View 1 (cartoon, protein in one colour):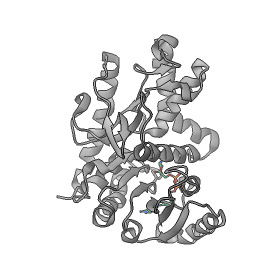
View 2: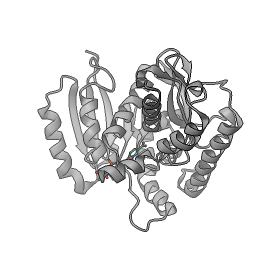
View 3: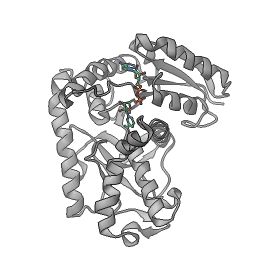
View 4: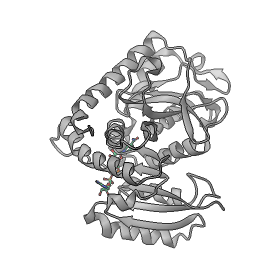
Length: 327
Ligand code: NAI
């Protein structure tokens, strides 16, 4: 066994938290040889419920769970953490405008960014799940002056996995037969699921499906999958979101397979004409705990238009929260 690492999870008593903590504690995220100490953050009124979750975590007697810290103090939660999964966020209430939503989340993610900057390990890997995930990640990043901006990422992996699942169903393949899917842009309905470079059992996906299905069914189904799940289940996707969070962190920490990539919301560096200053979904390959954007992919006019639309939305979100950035 390696020595334990510290993993913070915010919103730990929420529904994603309940599906996520047990996976992390069981070793699904970092491996069966990597013990973890969980640092669980909740708001004060949710601490009793969180205590119940801690009791259950202990009762699982996981070999890889080396300790649990449960707190409502962000400075305690992020002390010396190697990983931080920021799940807790303010949901959109009735009649709430997007501007109010961004503002309410700014009040959560600005102090969390600062606390990470003050207390976390210098190479902390931060994943923002709480929506609007890309812009919440940007707010946290912009309030963390002492950390590398590349420490901050947002989750588009659930969209990536949804794209794999839709394409597998359509082509009669298994998700593991499918390589090189990309989710460009925002984790929102403007995201662009791109299969122009995708292979299914080694064959080009674009040769296996027709353009009309791609444009009129596949893309909207992936974009609207969250709403479809809410309609069917009466609650938002939690287990699949938690599973995608585990996948995102595992890929980042342990590396992507040779000849494949994953989608991560990361700080734009200008690649593919996306101007820096937003957290944008890109195809990335990871190695040794570092991610790199996959370069040199051909982008046609169909893709370019959709990549620009989701970039525009992210720029507008950025403009709405810029006043929350630390000077
Ligand atoms: P939930 O409402 O069940 O749980 C959220 C938890 O966060 C609550 O227990 C709440 O007390 C806690 N919380 C609120 N403010 C906090 C703060 N300042 N510090 C610590 N904890 C805080 O919600 P659920 O279903 O677990 O979803 C969490 C977030 O994840 C939502 O914003 C949701 O929209 C988002 N989400 C993102 C997805 C993605 O693909 N990026 C997919 C699915 C959900």
